[in-house]
Image 1 (cartoon, rainbow, N blue to C red):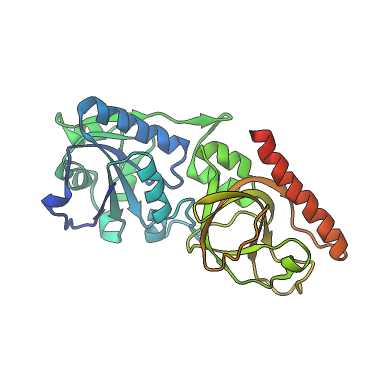
Image 2 (image 1 turned 90 degrees about the horizontal axis):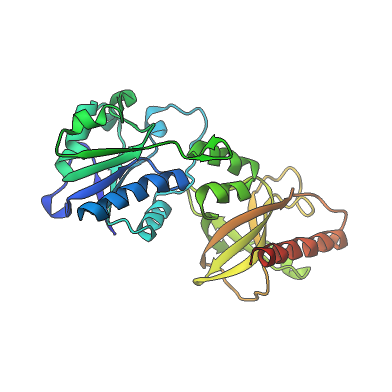
Length: 316
């Protein structure tokens, strides 16, 4: 997949453009099933017209630049992860537009001229609620007239799951609640957190439950505290695991707020410090809790491990 970085004013060269393109437009954070519907429609048009499938996304999130969010913005899929997912989806070209204050001031007409017509786009696909141009003043109702006769436009209707729109906002809320099973359903795949194994206090090894202490990649969102059924990718191989997110209250002073992500990998006994790993989250097991002694902790960890094993056996 070709990744083309764009900015305003454009500094793109003709050698970077390999169209004509069937273009899917959107921010696509999460690349969830609603986004997939848009990309698949663009893909169908690309196959029908013999054009290349292109996706246009934006970085950073517009609310960061425009100051619209009172809360810290987190990404369901940070840019590099989004690139990987789109490449695996068969996208030919990814346009990553730098979202700046100047870019945000473009009129809808200017946006269409510079970022659609000038790129050699022949077909545009976007969701029903996609907006563009200054203050989102351009809508998909306006797009056909702005594009003219040479560019066709397709609007993808609202995608629904359980009588509610599939959206990035909905998924973020579910992540904050720790509802990874529903997140999985809306994404069409498990939620994934990439990271690196770092040194921890190694206490798990002394009680028969060695854990990998994972430092998540910057920009990744960590689900709600608790214990989860997961799979962990280590050296391109996937393993069943059980993961605890929290502050280890059985051992730690409650005033020490050092959040950790610790994964016990089932039937695994290798030194993997420094390894890049990925955690796929499948289901919530229980909240983090403080135990009255090591024996009670070990008994519960044994149950958690079995819950993870049973989860994947039932899924087979």
